[in-house]
Image (cartoon, rainbow, N blue to C red; front, top):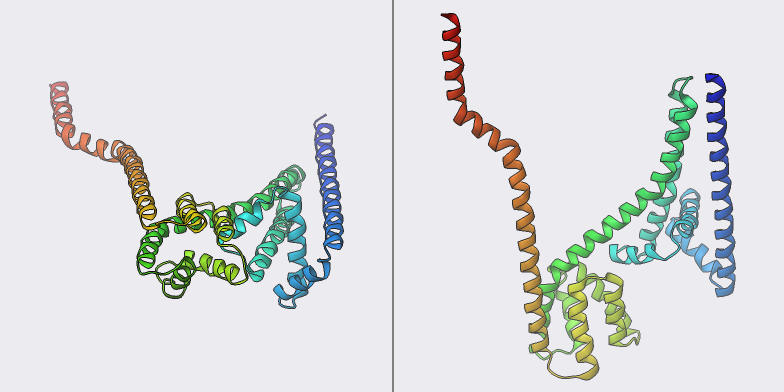
Length: 314
């Protein structure tokens, strides 16, 4: 009876695994067909292949990983979140994107290797059930780990940009008071402020390229604000767009925005202090209070035990 139940469980697990693999293969085939159709309609198929080959540095294996990573990206990301996160993480260049796609394609392969190693070294009796579970875990982790890595990189860079915004606003006030225009102020920040504004300097270098290519200042700043999605930077850029469109004094709006940014940072600092106080309270209750109790009540407790021992000895 136990053997029959074991055989049914193994058969059901294998059937589910085969169906899941077939469904994934069908989705990959459909996604690849849609990609080819879109490339033909846009006339971008040859350009995309050349871009992949160039980013792979002539390595066929890396080029295949990049292609598979792009196919997997279209399968798991249907809302375009990865493109936005890549921009926020600063991975705009072709080599950076190629490495990201290769990493995303390599994670499932690594999971397959881990499952194969477990299949080889696992015991004979419980091998099949655990291998099926390990395979499901490997599939889930191979999809989730690249997403967590990308989101972590994007969140870290957005936090660094947020720390640079107050200094960026102060420098803008100084440059505008010196009589520079918006484009000249951006050029000065890119040329001379790279050491103090490393992240924003890279972003405004791209904005300057767009402006030199003929783009509108308001559109370029709006695209930067929407791409990075940093609330403090969005406020400063909104002031710049408004002044660029309607004209007027820019010093006072920037100073008001700076005051608002300082108030936000003060509130954030108070929130961090409050959370740190709560954590320190937990640490004190867990570690300091028992030691203090032993130090204060220990001698009295030892004396009571000694007196009770002497009384029992009599």
